[in-house]
Amino acid sequence: MTSMARNLALIIKKANPDETVSVAVMEYALAIIFNYLFIFFTSLIIGYFTDSLGLTILALFVFTIIRMLSGGVHIKSIWGCIIVSVLLCVLIPQISYVTSNNFTLLFNIISLLCMFFFAPSPDKNSRIDSKYFKHLKLASIIMIGSNFFINSAVIALCFLAQSITILPFRREGK
Picture (cartoon, rainbow, N blue to C red):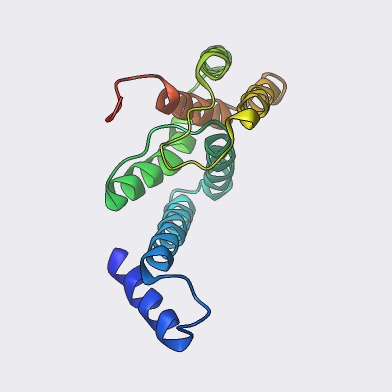
């Protein structure tokens, strides 16, 4: 993934050396894009073959939005991130089939409490001004609150998984 991003960044830089950012910046941005695309398409393919494509798309969408709003820890390895993300997005729909309404309600409550107390939890590279944190927290809470009406096990499991990533476990550098 990183080598693909580096090669493409070098090609772009060579094609237009004066009007492009550094190779390192392009490589970083392209690696993020490739990472997301690989997670997205791998999850879709697995979702298709497990007859849960719609729920996999829902999991991808919900997990992406709540993660953007609430932050959370990151896995250092690109491949580790890809594996965990794909596993979450394809296993959540499968687990949702055996999740009762009582568990959906419990997962919503746990997620809501986590977001209330700990969101947002931006990483050290975040460029979001802290004055917007209360808005991100509110948006996270509203999003989770909506599932009390929707009552989707897939959505509740996505929220629960994301809520775990914002808990204040010991992080490197803290």
